[in-house]
Length: 268
Image 1 (tube, rainbow, N blue to C red):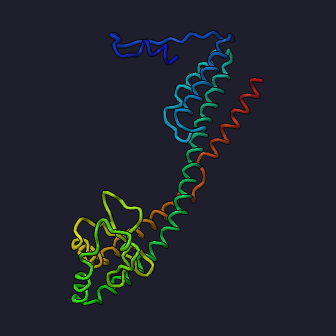
Image 2 (image 1 turned 90 degrees about the vertical axis):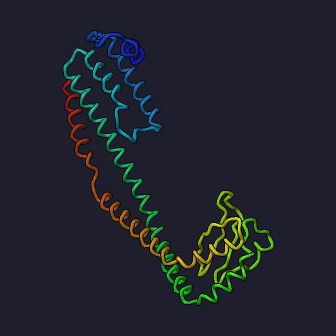
Image 3 (image 1 turned 180 degrees about the vertical axis):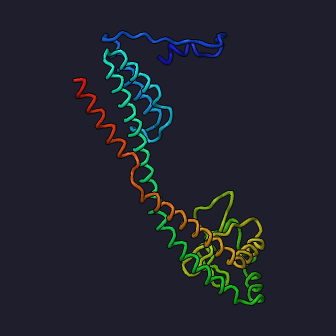
């Protein structure tokens, strides 16, 4: 059908308007032919959606509904048209219901991850606050001496000897991850079992300065953690409100199912 109509509704047609006629014969084999088209179109729609069942509802089922209605017209019983319309409406509502259930499941999984992430961030915040207090209590002279001590050691391409040594700045361990980002190499500072990533460059002295600057801005990092925690908590709370609601399509599915059963009993 799409191919046939495509020869009429296409680029290059010089007519301003066109009419497409579909001829059917009541009580004939036409009903079976339209049934085949309906079934094929439903399978194609599901395949294009990338799922064995529809998870999103758009105009994918438009052709399916059209084929089902024409099939009903080919059967010389007015109730069949009503039945086709009710069945199509029920199918549409069930698709919406499936999408709703899928969204609920997705939100539930998201909240499970949030409830794991929030305590981790809170712990990270508390430790970072402690690390910030520790660094703030160190004199500038001590920090300067530490800088002078390591300014030639923190290189971009660290050898295995230094990689495995106990290199540190103040009380922060300096770790070299085995798997590096070639475009943005980095080191890891660790204290009180919390690790911080610090990007490094070509200059060893510059890298030492990056460490100093990072540690002086731990209070800013604390603020970042607070913002992240607040955002995650707000999202989790909003998700809880969504999950409290009931499926809004259940009653409509029940009503349409009853109507369809009633119509079928009248036809039989």
